Length: 284
Ligand SMILES: Nc1ncnc2c1ncn2[C@@H]1O[C@H](COP(=O)(O)OP(=O)(O)O)[C@@H](O)[C@H]1O
Ligand SMILES: [Mg+2]
Image 1 (tube, helix red, strand yellow):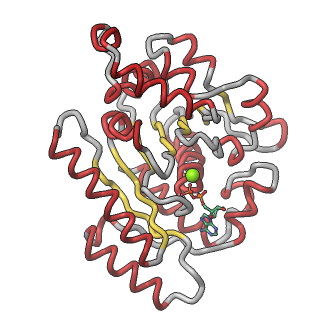
Image 2: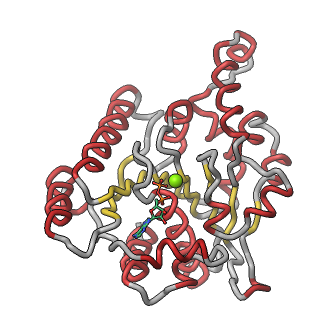
């Protein structure tokens, strides 16, 4: 199967990464139900805050079962453990059917695990056993490639330890950028970083920026639209999507019992823009 691994990343917090990753995953899962025989979509949460569980309203289950992507990274060859840490976010009995949408959640535990991973890479035993931090995600998640058409990775603001592993595993990177000057500078640093990795080893770090999404476009648009124009001249017109408007619906959806934006306010302005972004990503 030709799984597409898409990282949602930027080196700033609060730019809409978690929101975009969740909306994209939900939207792609809907497209898969319509056009791809219900092919599966997986969200991988790499932020120790674990907010993806809140986005889909499954935090209680994640906590009760102590699920965390960190468990998996410590034992990359344990396929059973990988399966055990993935949760279905289907809530059909509550009127929220998501039959083909899954989550590999994160918890605070991920912080400790990434520290352990750094220590392990410096140990000779690790080197002898072929342990490689750069390929840890690809190694640990490889068994999933047969089961999911899309894997969406929600990245923390500071990727640090896992940065190389994400850009080794991902095929595409989607960059949400808040429509203000400071965020644009942050996004440029992030993409420079990525280009440097690609220069270092283009085969190992194959991830390419496939889309830049201007987020939280304020109602008073003059300055923000100037920022969008600057994004277009920096990244190229074709790479920048329509801006997602700022809207309370986006904040309200997860707070309303973990509904997705398409479940909570499908006709809202941000849902309509995100729907066209989903379509664009789906069609590759
Ligand atoms: N289009 C939007 N309109 C209004 N609020 C938004 C929008 N997109 C994201 N937010 C809110 O902004 C905050 C940060 O978004 P989030 O997706 O968590 O960013 P990140 O993951 O980059 O830190 C959240 O409270 C989220 O609900
Ligand atoms: Mg986030």
